[in-house]
Image (tube, rainbow, N blue to C red; front, top):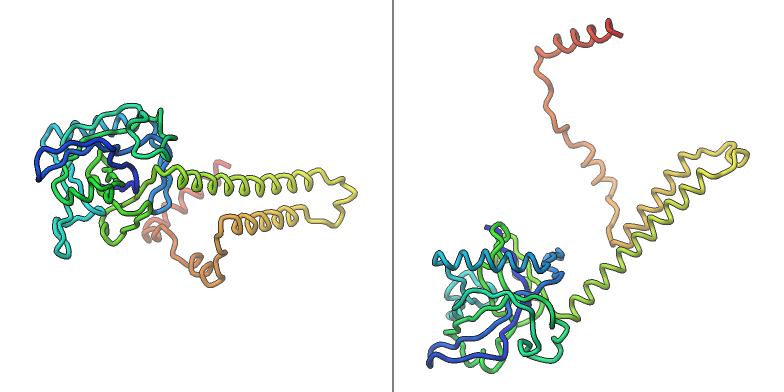
Length: 284
């Protein structure tokens, strides 16, 4: 099972009710449609159709008795450092619906109104006062990519927690629904795309100009060399845009000296190969 984790993918809503001193039922937004970036820098798209699929698959799993725990920082241990890492568990099926104003914990999140969200009720059995006071609020859903379902949900302290040491055998990712954070990420990506596109436009312009040179101006000029030089300049410019360092000569040599991907043919094959070549020669 390959799990990915969405940092600040959701939050506890304002409404809640208690079933006693030991349990607090808290409404929560688990995931929102949109484009989210994980802790490894990978961008993932979650259109409304995928949110609905995740909800359907999660509910199907719940119907078989699967528990979706509410953890702290995606801990894989129930106890760690003398601290209970499990806060509770999902106490209902997930529900897909359009986010309304009343669903939001503060006015800064009103940009989410009108988007499709996955909601659920969690039974909080540990650190109830921290949840009530809002000290524990941000949620990070863990998603099983292979089965497209929510596997667990964690309370996180900050909007960008990276915990690769906790997930050595699994691919992990954290996502954000913070408008400012996503806006910054989107702006950076758009800027890089624009700069890369400009590099490519310049290359094609140079290539076109080379092809358009009058014949009398190309005497003694190697057009192929001009094109190769333009490509080299383009690659250098693109590396600067993407912040990629060129390979060192030693690295290039190491790469080129690697053995071929195919083993040598068996010794007996040569006679068949020579006969085939002779047959082709006669046909020619």
